[in-house]
Image (cartoon, rainbow, N blue to C red; front, side, top):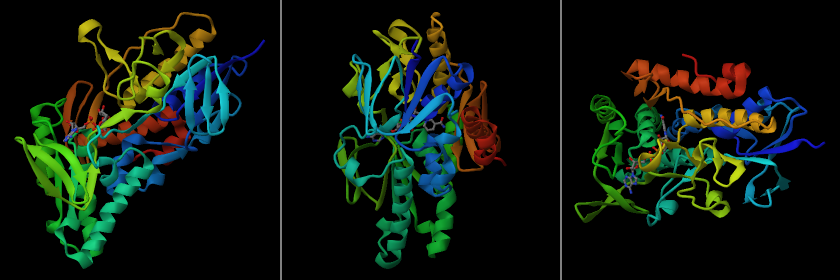
Length: 401
Ligand code: NAD
């Protein structure tokens, strides 16, 4: 009798939720569970904008995976996945090969610059602790340079995209930059923050009232929005944008791209029918034709609705954690030879923070803004740590007011 091999790739919200739940519901004898992740730590991807703006050190938003996994049931291997062979049922990594009976692909997201010229070279991003730290360091270095250059470009920051990441990043920036200015003896009024968004409206998922609250909050603190303006290139001077068919150079030394993400590039190399790193999954969260391979989190397109009207749910930490828990339950059913269950998303709402003290959101169907939204955001952030890491990590990493 051999224990079935369950292999989980990625320890983000989706993968780590799978393992955390699985080790609670199955016995030591039931399966041989292996978790593979690039880093030895899990990072809170939803807190990265805070690191990028300097409100939080990156170490505060991470915890060791070893603190979450139960060594009796799970083997954790810090390694980078280099290849998935779905038919041979083998995964190649920088620490050797691993075969599986059941595979959970939860390899997360990367930045997507849509082939825009110069973007990868000239803009920083906010997609990992490393990139968030680089974004922060670049802004600070340019402020330091300003003291000798006196070039207004060094105090100019361009943010590409007014999606959730862009807006949450701006919310932190207007809180931290006045402090940074004080440290370096710079007048905050000299700082220019411009956010460029291709669509004529921003944050379309919220009501006009909520969006206006966010815009007013940011504009009153010096942010300038350029809506209906597409970024077509990036260079050493900033962004090139297009308005009414005319190209224009926007100048800044600090250039941040928050206008696109995609699932792991390994997805295209490993599966068919993958778009922007995401593969459509069946309602039990497995891939069509591969009942032993689950894809969850940012590498999965989980459909809302059926037929022509079906649209993938947006990729969020909230859905990723639910997908992870559901996958654990389905693996347990599968091990018992029972029928797997369809996933049903329980949308608890969304909050977009504006720094530590403000925000907008819809929670359990009710609109909130201002302090209550900021409070809810901290509750949500703490809940994520508690749900995956348990009480001990919740106490050390939670955000208490
Ligand atoms: P996004 O794709 O949601 O937003 C990117 C924005 O950039 C869009 O508004 C888009 O119109 C704009 N854009 C794209 N190309 C452009 C161009 N060439 N020029 C100008 N503007 C351009 O990306 P995101 O904000 O990083 O969010 C990614 C996912 O993560 C989403 O599913 C989001 O819901 C989720 N998220 C949620 C939260 C939250 O719940 N608080 C926070 C962050 C991210």
